[in-house]
Length: 88
Image (cartoon, rainbow, N blue to C red; front, side, top):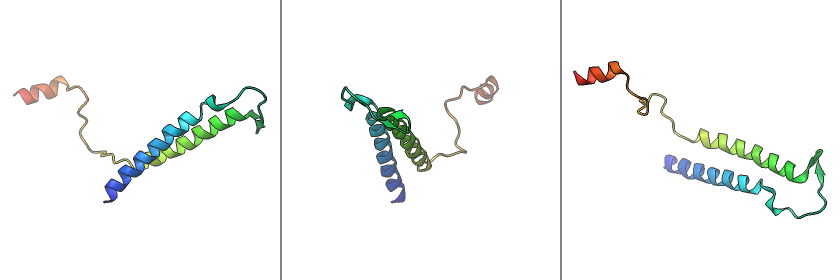
């Protein structure tokens, strides 16, 4: 049960990250005056804030990802020594 809950939570986090990347693009801005926030134009502050939150959510999603550190890596090419051992 817990494994399914983590997968669902991870998918929700990844969806939120995707939403933040879309929201960070200043497509919603109208022409005219812009406001300053901490010395930055408001759209830059929004983009940086979205990227910072996305980085935190990404870290959280990785904590919920099962990784077997002792699993065999199948994508590496076999060396000649290994190929000869299997052939004999």
